[in-house]
Length: 148
Image 1 (cartoon, one colour):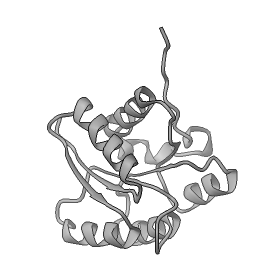
Image 2 (cartoon, helix red, strand yellow):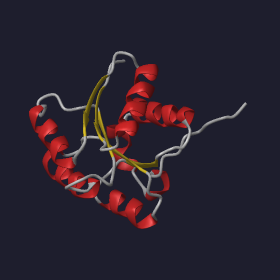
Image 3 (cartoon, helix red, strand yellow):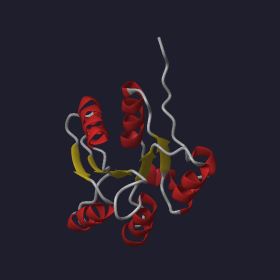
């Protein structure tokens, strides 16, 4: 099923890896990549009548942090699904993302296969149906990878 995904990520390598993994998972998906939180907000305003199916965003971006951007997204765009994906595993950062309304938090995986598994989980999850059951217990998303 085609998906519209918005990615807010300032690292070029991470952008490329995400795009390639998404292409392998769901060839028909549309990916819009922006490097800053302000540009993400501009993208959402431009697509307000056809918002992305999910937003994936980094925490550490130039100008506006992902947490600040997330607060604005929640105030302007309601229950738009947002997954925070960051290198930070700091509990305060994870708590801030939860408190600001992210649907899930992912520590960027070190392996490409794990990245693909996480992206697949993010794009196939029906986030609006899970919103009422959102809790800290199921907030931290991890790739369920079986090694051979």
